[in-house]
Every structure is written in structure tokens, then in C-alpha cells.
Length: 137
Image 1: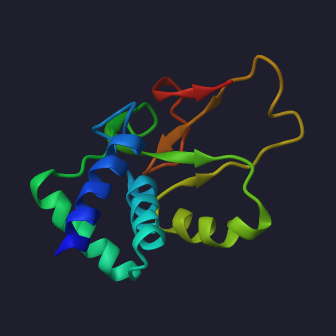
Image 2: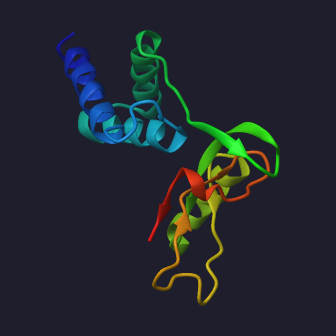
């Protein structure tokens, strides 16, 4: 019982930390990141962490951001674009990309230079960049 209380408190704090800029956008990357933190902090299995997290979301539903895609001409879920993945991360990121959870950007030689803003999100359906929902310098 004591462990469950600690996990619940930690879930509240992790959500507050990871969703501080947008409490209504717990996409898959954040969802799984929270699960991994629970595993690391409490020494529980991945399945147990997911179970605790799902229980948490029975009372506080998980939301994922949506936006307008001009190519699809529709309101769509948007997913993060990942830049500069290492070779070690690449395999798991490619699996997530195949499941429609993220987009791995192919950075050309001159892609990152002063004044160029890179989009943070893309359309889940057509994979087009959606710069109006966030960019990084």
C-alpha cells in the first residue's frame, strides 16, 4: 500500500514536470517516458508501471494535441519530429516511427544553420511538417 501511494505521488509529479508547458498534450513519447521513470525509481516491471499509469488516467484522461494539416485538409493528431538521433537510438526510434509515434528527420548538410527554424511536429497521417505548432531555432 505504501509503495502505491509513493507511485501515485510520483505520477502526479512526473505529469506536472513533463506537461508543464502544455498539460493537455501527453503524447506517446511522454507517456512512455513517465513509465520508464517509474520503472527506474521503484524497481517495478514495465507492465506494472503501465498498469499504474493506466489507473492514473482513469480519473485524469490522457489528451494528445491535434492541429490542422493543409495537405490532408483536416484536423489531425500531430507527432514529434526527432532530429539528430544517434545510431544506438535509431533502431527503437525507427520502430516508433513505423508505428506512427514520431518522425525521424533527415538532416541534410546545411539544414541547421543560423536563422533556420526547424518544425517540432508533423502530421501523423501524411508526415508533413507542421511549423505553426512549434519550431526550434
